[in-house]
Length: 236
Image 1 (cartoon, rainbow, N blue to C red):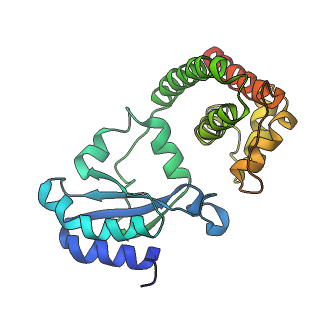
Image 2 (image 1 turned 135 degrees about the vertical axis):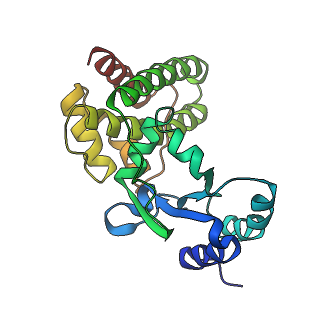
Image 3 (image 1 turned 90 degrees about the vertical axis):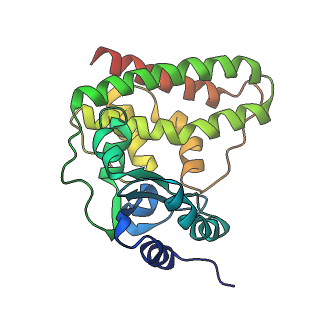
C-alpha cells in the first residue's frame, strides 16, 4: 500500500469529520518557500474542529495512524474556541505558524486571531532563559561525551531557530526563509559570530549530520549564541 500523501490525508480528514472540521493547515518548513518538508521529510499539521471530544478523536484515529505510518507526526488538535483563546499563551507559535502555513482544508483560521507584541516578548524572554538554563545544565554533564553533546545541540537547534525568527520579528527585521539566512540575520542583529554555527545550520538544512567531539568549540559557540540572544531580548 502506498504511503498516505498530504492530499489524501486532507481528503480523509475532511470526509470523516464533515461539518465538524474548521481548518486543517500545514505549517513550518513544508509551507515555506518551495514547499519542501522539514529535514527528516515529515510534515507538521494543525487541525481545528468545532470541539474536541472522545467521539472526534476516535473518528480521527484510523486516519492519523496511516498518516504516522507515512512518517509524519500527528496533527496538533484544538477546538476552534481553544484556538481563538490561546494566542496570548502561545504567541511565538502562533506568529511562527502564521508566517509559514498553507490551508489544505476548511477555512482561514486567522480572521479573528490577534497576537500582541507584549505577549510575544514575554513568552520569548521566558523560553530563551529557560532554554539557556536547561542547556547549561545538560552541557556540563555532556561536555566530555561527543555523542551526548551532539544529541544535546542537535535536539535544541530547531527550537532556537524559531526563537531567532521571533527575535527578528520583534526587532522589525525581515525574516528570511532558510536556516542559514535566519542565523546570518540573527547574528547581525544580536551580535554573535554566524560562522561558528555553520555546522548546526547544515544539520538543520539536512546537508550534513552534526557530529561533535568532546569539549567541541562548536557546542560552546552555540551556547554563547543562545546566551547572547536571551540577553538581547531581555534588554529590548
